[in-house]
Image 1 (cartoon, rainbow over the protein chains, first blue to last red):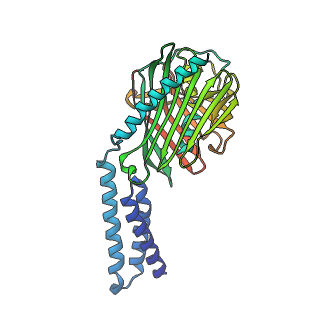
Image 2 (cartoon, chains in turn brown, green):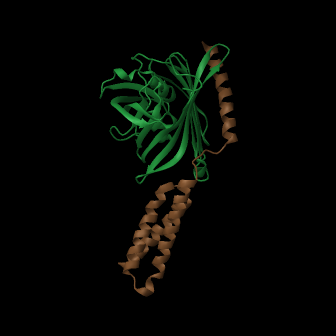
Length: 107
Length: 252
């Protein structure tokens, strides 16, 4: 049973790190929380000499939680200035004006 | 993302056989935060901006209705989206003359143009790495593009609607006419960004398309005032659920 908990805590720990790096906001708490739960279960099932690894998993989970919480609270959702997109909008509008005039010419 | 846009667009339907009220103003700008529900948690994904402006040619003046979707900068490195949906309409009756769609979703691009001439539509489509295709097809007299319908629905007088009342109509999307049903579900108070809490008309939308799923799971809340600003939109698509929440409204 300890081995199963250990594997699950590692899998969710890795997912937790990946989700923390990706801009998935609070969704990252899902694998982090599971890594934490399985880390605790592994710790409970471990002998004194086996407790080092689950403690590392718990530390990683705690660190990831802090990073996610910090990102959620401090990083503002905003759209970057995209000059190419702005230029595209201007050109599209100019094209549309010509196309409308062509349509009017058909009337 | 096309399905998300569907979610947005299909909320907004008009009725050709109903009376219309206040016209849509030029210079209006509505900004929404688009979120996607992943495993029960909402993740902020993109900003949707809907704006109106007057565009004049030598003969006519049109109302340019624009809907832009841009992913937040945090997503740009992973999956950048820059979509524009536009409609050039008659300011008096919101009948479209030209509809344009330009999407760039994670490198996949598609440009689409519909030129409306009476009941005939001349469409031009250009997909990434594919030759341009042209098509001519006929639509019903009251069929509109999704963007102009988005605005037309706001000219309707929902105060006369009864709870559960439905209306069928047609939209044109992806070179196809699609039947859509709108159901009035009553009134609810929701948060409307900088407008504060507002009493809204709650409407449910269903369409004969694979893009939307669930019964009464695709919803729109329009402020129950003269402006009928879409304050909240919730949609259910095959890959999950999401919502658009109004963050700011100006020029209304």
